[in-house]
Image (tube, rainbow, N blue to C red; front, top):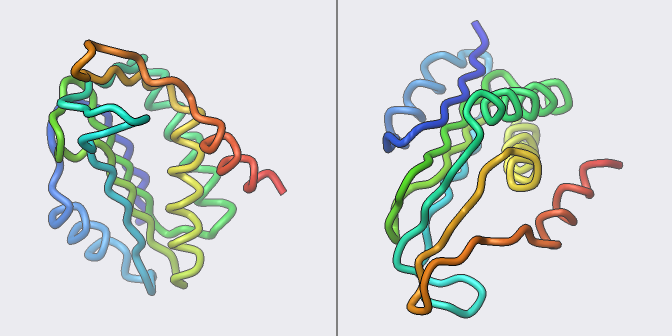
Length: 153
């Protein structure tokens, strides 16, 4: 049975547990691709000590499910798991996990990258960073829009 598991919340996740799950439940898959996003200690030239992620409950999960469904269809994915954290996170904390499985590695890699490129621009998340100069909201990046646009062809 195919998995599409979308979760948004404050709880941390275990890459080992999620990877074991998708491998166990994807017997037709020949490969699994993964991406784990982390809170880094700098952004746009400033030191970052922590980040607060906010979202629009309900709408965020629907947006992620729509992105996952599009990726599943386009890349013939067997399973998709997306876990995104919200709340206050410190440097080094895990923010997001994307796992995709497919019969062939190319589809698994492309599906994972597609989901992340669309998530960065379409999912309703807002990031606020704590810097030495105080808190600041993180603006959308043109590079994220360009990454998403390459999938429009």
